[in-house]
Length: 71
Image 1 (cartoon, rainbow, N blue to C red):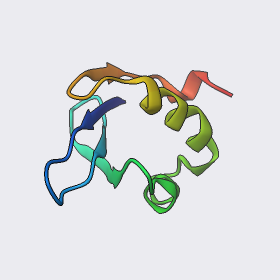
Image 2 (image 1 turned 30 degrees about the vertical axis):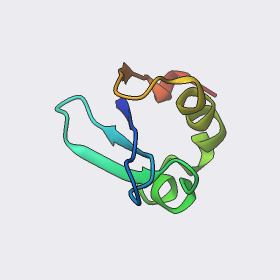
Image 3 (image 1 turned 180 degrees about the vertical axis):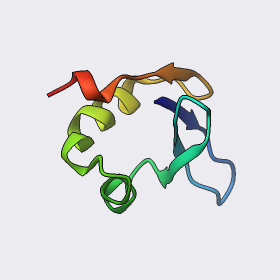
Image 4 (image 1 turned 180 degrees about the horizontal axis):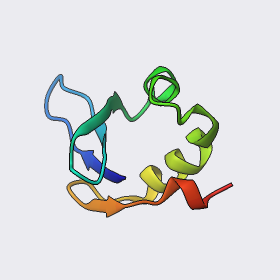
């Protein structure tokens, strides 16, 4: 899975994209409202782990993440 954090401009908020290994979009959500999107793709139980990574991830950087290895 890949995480991309995108900086919003003007009235468009900052958001996050979660993509699979084929780079297909899995989830797209605002940085401040991840809950329903993560639940929808089955990652609600990993929300704290994912959001801690997103918090420190610079805008525009793509990070490969293996959520299956995390508890």
